[in-house]
Length: 415
Image (cartoon, rainbow, N blue to C red; front, side, top):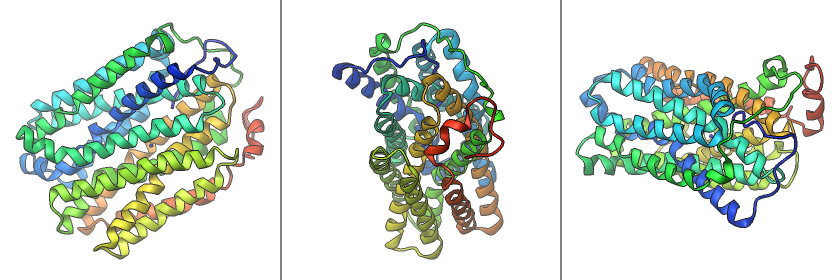
């Protein structure tokens, strides 16, 4: 729990959509969002089967999560350029197609190279979609960003939950882990069909950026702090996505049960993605809700380190509730900094690009810790410590200081 540069056609906001148009937009956003995690989330529950076919260390297996996340970070700016040249609707449609083809190609994955290549291509497609959709939300729902963003991010988490819960069953039905991974191409086809339903609402004209003073977001200290904050929060998400099922398999859980534990965590993320943005929408100061989410992550990781057994379900729910809230809340806080959709889109693009690049290193770090210590406790401790750091960073997100941070010349200090 994802934004990029959806540059507006004019300096003004679009008028609020009608109820029917809002429903169509929401449906398309949900079905597009559902496709943004299965390419990664389906790997963890099938890791045991994959390792039987392709013997790999945990460090090398981390590449299946690291590379798509890295591709997401590096491809963020590409999304804005494609939207500027071909229009937002064509750009998202092509990206959903790329995700679907990448999933389908895994049907013929007999070695590590096809898995790695499809991971990279799926990650690039995911990045472009995430680069465009939040700007569309900002433009069509200018006064109610928090709730539509919560819905969109909830869909992303739901896609991960579906992949975690259903991939072992898909493996049994398909007769192979390759068939299970390829089956998620059907969801991409459904998302593509829904996206074409809103062609008129989104439009296919190239997106023309309005004149923006000081467009170089890298010049602004707050842009970097938001990027680091997003990256550290996403690091927890990518690590549990990759390593939570193997962790429970090592504790003696069956493969299906381990997948269901990941599904439980992502289910908690879904609930959090709906509840916490709704709570945050009650006040322009999002910090109390952000801090509550961070505490949930810290307690969840601490619980996994200290206790197992029946209490593991509690720690999983707390961890999922915290992680699921940080993702949308960070995007909401990012959009809060600038009122214009074009400007906010540029900032969100920078934040996601920097954040995903940083977060891509976390599965590798956790994999190395696992290979070195023969357990995941060290990885959970690392992520808990990172989240403590985020507590101090979040205190600086005071909305009263936002207008000065990006006005005129870049500020020397954050407000």
